[in-house]
Amino acid sequence: MSKKAPLEGIRVVDFTWAWAGPQASLILALMGAEVIKVESRRRLDHSRLRSLVAGPMVGPDSSFIFNTLNLNKLSVTLNLSQPRAVEIAKAIVKVSDVVMENMRPGVMDRLGLGYEALRQVKSDIIMLSSSAVGGTGPERSYTGYAPTFAAMGGLAYITGRPGGRPAPLMGSIDLRVGSTSAFAVLAALHYRKRTGKGQYIDLSSAEAVSALMGDVFLDYSMNRRVPPRMGNRSKFMAPHGCYRSKGENQWVSIAVGSDEEWRALCETIGDKRLKEDERFADCLSRWQNQDALDAVIGEWTSAHDQHEIVETLQKAGVAAMPVYDGPSLVQDEQVKARGTLTPVEHPLMGEKMVVAPMWRLSKTPAEIRRHGPLLGQDNEYVLGELVGMSKEEIEKLAEEQVVY
Image 1 (cartoon, one colour):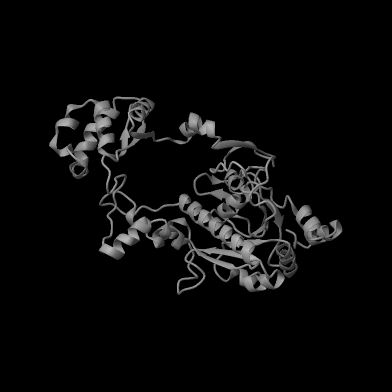
Image 2 (cartoon, one colour):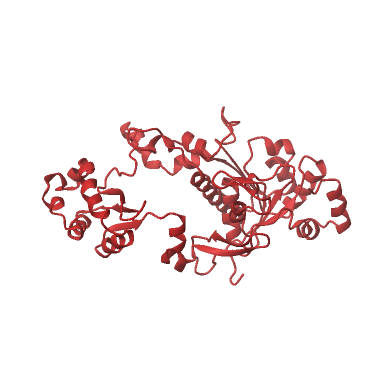
């Protein structure tokens, strides 16, 4: 690491799996924390085996999804159904600062690894438990995945086409929950630095979703209004949407937020109907007549190339961006210049493109130091150097499927 990372010296024991939990520990790992992922062949992280988007993987060490979500992390394999493995896990916690998990409430307690048990091992430990709706309340045992987090949190109800059904939201919800979890851990680390005390973090994924749509809750609490589903449209801006451009399935996103931007759009398009039609005379009338407005703008965009539209409108001061598919995104010059997607060498998969840290801290940069770990790749370091077990003892426990 070229510069000292912000979380260098912090060690995290990571019992998370799937997407939301690993995203949280990934953020900490990118900021320099030593994150030890506790895994087991008895119950593999499903992102090692399959993806809802890409389908089944070749093997547990050849998942590009797992690789992206677990950069910089270490992997130790412990079969936590074995009491000896639980004791070893506690020994790792003893030399660590943070424990993270995203199982159903009560699972860690049943394993003997709940907060009270771990606090006996290390009094100032910080533990985050992330679950569907939180660790308390009558629905605490509910199973949850991203679409249900979004539904319970209120976001799915207001998402979708006008007059249509609620739209389920998936992976991006997991990533929002993970980012919220990482923020909570950082706050707890700051508190511990000031007081010397650890604490327990009970995080509800549904509440994490709700917290990111506060304006909707505020509107209901003050005005008793529930917003309708609006598709790509805005409550305030018009035009605001995606417009088809020249070429097969090519689109641009255009949003106008002021009269100045509207005038610039009219000058660029040069269609007299936009200037002369009373339905487009001011912000309110444009918003009330969006179907007619979109039709005129769509005529213009459909006759021009996607990048030509974006370049022309941006020069005029109008917010416009291409609507990219995957291949186009990879080829974008801005993405290349920022290193948003960066290659990482994986021992089995070869060079793979992963998403780089989105923050550019000038003094303490986040860095990708290593590919996602192979299963059990760091058993020797974690069990030997950190816990102090001999090579012979590790091999014996592997034969007994404790280290498994």
